[in-house]
Image 1 (cartoon, rainbow, N blue to C red):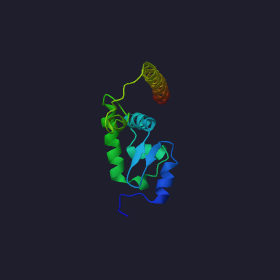
Image 2 (image 1 turned 180 degrees about the vertical axis):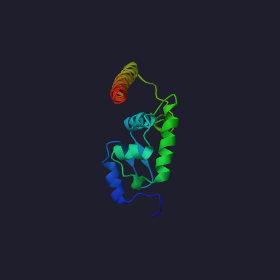
Image 3 (image 1 turned 45 degrees about the vertical axis):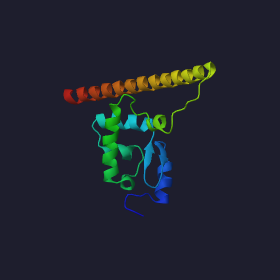
Image 4 (image 1 turned 120 degrees about the horizontal axis):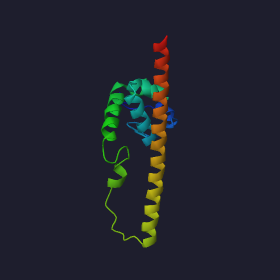
Length: 147
């Protein structure tokens, strides 16, 4: 096997990580949650390798080039209109020519609304946690400066 391929043991190990959506001998697909957490930690000043270690990844398994590419890809995805959402599923294959019934349209829209509600809730929780972390950090700085 080539240098950039994963062994069966490495694939099994990666599959056990909750932040891995899919893994093959050549590539890893990460969850949207992972990408959001990664970006948050990166913006707080952590290095990509430290973030991956914190999130239970074996950095030696991934290798330097994968880690560098992952970091660049996540930062680029964060500024896209669709964000971290996997755009491959929407653009795969031939578009459907099937006419949808009113009930199917309503069901799809309801599913989309539910998904967006969950996303908003997650992001608001994330913002709240970031504010709490910043508040605690500033409180610790004030204690250190007052000594």
